[in-house]
Image 1 (cartoon, rainbow, N blue to C red):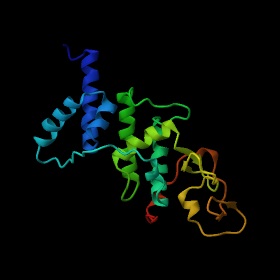
Image 2 (image 1 turned 60 degrees about the horizontal axis):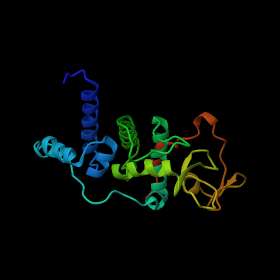
Image 3 (image 1 turned 120 degrees about the vertical axis):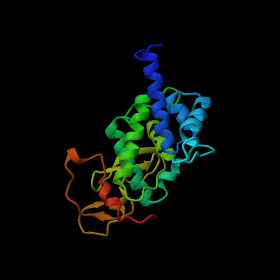
Amino acid sequence: MRVSDDRYCRDRLRFDLALRLIGHEARTHTIRIWTGLTEDRVRKLYRTYITEHPGERITRRRGKSPQRCGFFLRSPRMQQEAAVLAGLFCMVGIVVRGRRLDPRALTVTQGEMLCLAYETYHALVTAPQISFEHAAFLVLALSRADEIVLHHCCGCGALAIADRYTLRTPVCGVCAAAPHASGGVRGAHGLRIDRPPVPAAARGTPAPASLGGTEAG
């Protein structure tokens, strides 16, 4: 086989992505569905590139991958972080309105976009609370849109994560935590938010800087 063969290039891209996922402590099952590699090959990659290099401190996580969407709604802080991550997914193009991802047919390019978004999230958010496994699950959950969906906050226009079947008006964590003010928009928790309108070009991605001072709920 020549190095220039398409098959070799595809395999090399899969291996490179698998190593990147291992670096994020992804589970074997997660690596398999995002790379198309067999579980046996993934285990061999762990042995060859991780266990044989004692300087690498990578945890190989066991057990089932996350499966509960309620994780992203359990506190204002978590909702904010999930919204930031979702905004990054939209920016890199892995989450697109009306397009559903098939876990059985994910591409290497989509896996690379997932990694890029997660790495950017880690660079932007102080003390991030969402693991890579939860990030990978969030992509698929938003794609299905059967339990959680994306909305624009009624107060500031930022992206927000919401329960698909909630009857409350969508509101981001920052607006939900804002003090009562006269005049302004009434949020999901009865808060009145007095803020200037956000330009259309700025809507869709929350401000990551606002996460630093938000306490976990």
